[in-house]
Length: 269
Length: 269
Image (cartoon, rainbow over the protein chains, first blue to last red):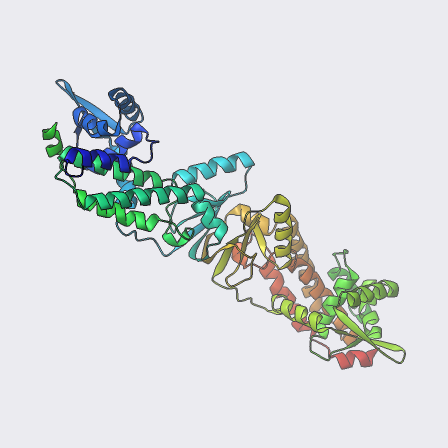
């Protein structure tokens, strides 16, 4: 079976899409972040279709997702004859670039100095909204209204702020940073990446579109795991967290696959 | 009037006991802390009575308070003939000595480095008890379960702890550290100490018991103000806090009065 490139590719897609809960708009965000993050980069509708087809994404679902992302100001489209070309807006580009180090760096250089900030007392309702807004920035509410972030990070106005060293990370906080569901999602990711790594030992010669599809899936499942928790160094996580192992396997997989150029992809459809 | 030492003394007592809410046991704690803080120091019942009489404290109230402090393990008593002698227990001595720097130092050398600790999440009831226990140690709950203390301070077990610099003390926290009632008590104390300082310019020659009574009252009203709030440096207090001014006036008054020796006091009754 492994001698047939088509089978190898299909099996790889199958191994890496173990996580069936894919949102199409989020996969498009992954594709642009991975392939079209320089100003001026554009991807045609045809390439987008070819990249997502092997994941079982239907053209109609793709159209809906592109429409949504345009409405959100993440991408723009230009029509040339019968073909649409999509690119990140300035805002989409900025957000994509901001997320990239966390996704693509083999080793993350976490700050030594942290900030704890205590937001002003407020009604219970206001507290929830504040915590939610901070979570969206990747900051963990240690308890309601109390935020742990790298030093110099923005926080809720009028907070008590302190910068320094974290001396003790208790187990209850580790479990809050990565609850059982997060720990399990890393276990699953690690297992899938391990299977894919073994398969890569017999990787056949792949076309650029196949490479791009596999890259997309790897980065997408990785992004999904990463952004399910706060951006904190490994020392804050429960024992047994597979985050560091997964990071290494993701970087190995991406290196092994290589990165096809946009022009090559457009020429291949 | 000021030419008569008796009048001067009575007026001084009057000026300094502006705060009528005196607890007798607490005044005895002040007396031992001020006069009998070395191991082996003893004060007779007769001296205790003479020192507290001018404050309007009745012998019966004194007996009740001494009984309570003995029951609490703060003081012990020894009977010699018809006279009782009282001294601090080891525990009373240790607690008295621990409180002394905050009461008696002209300049307090506050740490530059602070600790913020976040106690584990708990039911609402447990939170209140924890906060109360920390308050008793002079530590402020910034919000429930969140404590600001000098670095290296003990805190609730299993807390997230961070040591470093406090960057921003917001107004809501200043007002929590010293609410309006605390600010007002310092205003009142400052005014009384100011009046006493003016009177001290015409201080007549006083007997050792009178000196000790005045010292007791000064230290007592000062202790009462000090221990109504957390032990934090002036930079954490609201603008206009009279704590530093009061400290200077207290130290000036105690220096002006001088400290009578226990033997001299015992010889004077």
